[in-house]
Length: 124
Image (cartoon, rainbow, N blue to C red; front, side):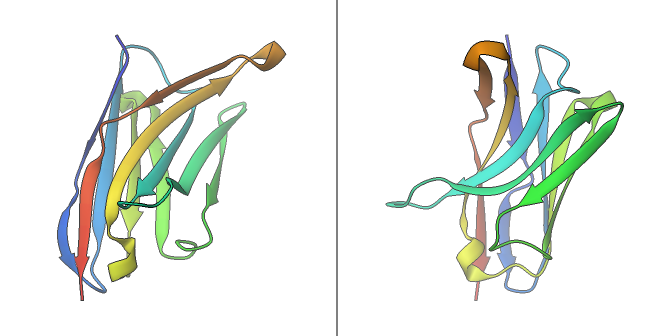
């Protein structure tokens, strides 16, 4: 059974930092795209960051415009874990943060998993 379990959320003052972790289990995720999304009540889920496997042990990271330069995504394949280092946090970063794992196959097939989310609250 595949599981993604987020941790590391909490309450932090504006300008502070948090590091989120997402531990994956149930299979090896080294070739999967691992990402972070966030959502606040009444709004659509927002893309935060992802780290994609491009083959040969190379990974590429992409970020949402609102977090570029402040957040860093990384992964430890030996631990099947992806991290999100969040610096210079702002009140508008307050949201539930979700971890996701995905893999695309030929003919449009897609495999996707989501965690349960972890709350991040940034006070002003």
